Amino acid sequence: MAVKTRFAPSPTGFLHVGGARTALFSWLYAQHCKGEFVLRIEDTDRERSTQEAIDAIIESMKWIDLKWDEGPYYQTKRFDRYREVIDQLLAEGKAYKCYCSKERLEQMREEQMKNGVKPRYDGHCRDDHSEHAPDEPYVIRFRNPDDGVVAFDDMVKGHIEVKNSELDDLIIQRSDGTPTYNFCVVVDDWDMGITHVIRGDDHVNNTPRQINLYKALGAPVPVFCHLAMILGDDGAKLSKRHGAVSVMQYREDGYLPEALVNYLVRLGWSHGDQEIFTREEMINLFTLDAITKSASGFNTKKLEWLNAHYMKTLPASDVAKELVWHLDRLGIKDLSNGPAPEDVVRNYCERTKTLKEMAQKAACYYQDITEYDPAGVKKWMKDGSVDVLKASLEALKALPSWDAKSIDEALENVAKTMEIGMGKVGQPLRIAMTGAAMSPGIGDTMMLVGQERTFKRIEQAIAHFSA
Ligand code: GLU
Image (cartoon, rainbow, N blue to C red; front, side, top):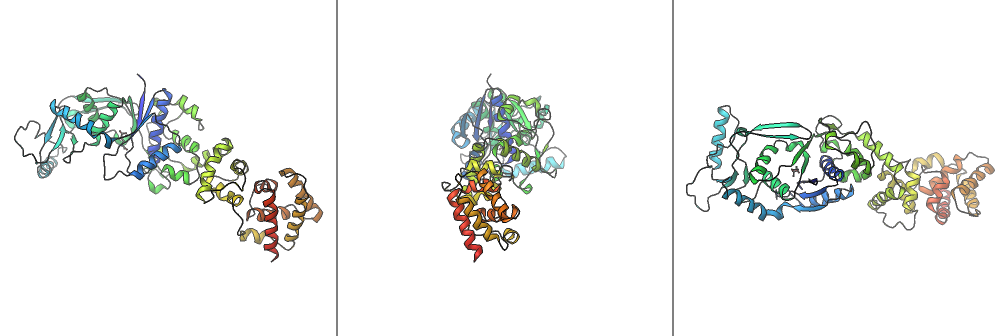
């Protein structure tokens, strides 16, 4: 049977690292098996679900390039189907209406606790055929089997067995008529033909109840694979307090999607001691039996290292797409006056750690210089620097061709003629070009600025520092 996996986020917040890892593993497994991957938005909790969160999840999935073959499905659009299945279960006596009041349930709980037994519904309404007023509130419960065990072999956790006597008669429809999470998940996974349920291990306790539902419906039970949680740098469960946790925050912080995905795949999965995987390699190598059982720790340093690797090794045009996004965020939308973003990437991929930093450094190539970095000015703009700028301008204007090598040679000649070190020529020119004294080689920097603008910038600096 063809493999079909799904990612089923509840849209109550942004897509965080844990969710993204679940999505990635589900996607990878489907890819590996040449199967299909479904995106399903579990939005039945209307109070906590928001459109903003749905948009953020979809945007994040697109950014890390996890394409779904089906969906997004929305649970809120499937209420008729849930209703139909509930009616069927009622008709078959596999579910029943429960009229127990809050007070009764509360009292039952207290007594069970007092007697040292695990609180669970006592089945009072299972065979209650008494008359109820039409407006009397009720919930619908699933009639869980009384005897035997529910057992399954989780791909990560191994064999799990729970006695039915420990399971409640699960509420599948609330008193307001809405179906509950454990019920909808089962109907959806059944209807959508999901063969492998890969999700966080916070759901492992729900699984036996869900398996009983599958069986009652006569539906095939999927394979389960519960992923161990992710811990922060400090060993506590990864949460907002560890800094960036949402996928889009990583984008804002200047990471490449390739770096984040490579980072995520190693959070709980390994292939020997290999750290760097292309997409194709991940797809070819990813199997469920190589998922680790223990919780994995988040390591920001490793993510930074991967980001530096991908900034240097991906085609400049791929990195440039991300750079353009960051430039846009800095308000730089018109790139026609500046260098091709690929050229910025080539010159800065080893000088910056993130795309955010690269965009900040590259802003000067697209915007006019309005101020000069005081520290750089103090260090390099000395008596005589304006003369250096003037001599450089003259030498550059006389150049027959505009390329980095000719520029560097011309400026070395200026240094020689003036009998000063190259630093005293290059640094004032960097300040003139970029506003600060840090940039790639001066020839490359001037190439990025462009010939006409180089002349203008030197003239602007001469005027500014002569004043
Ligand atoms: N909607 C659930 C969540 O976001 C996931 C349910 C599932 O994967 O079965 O935690």
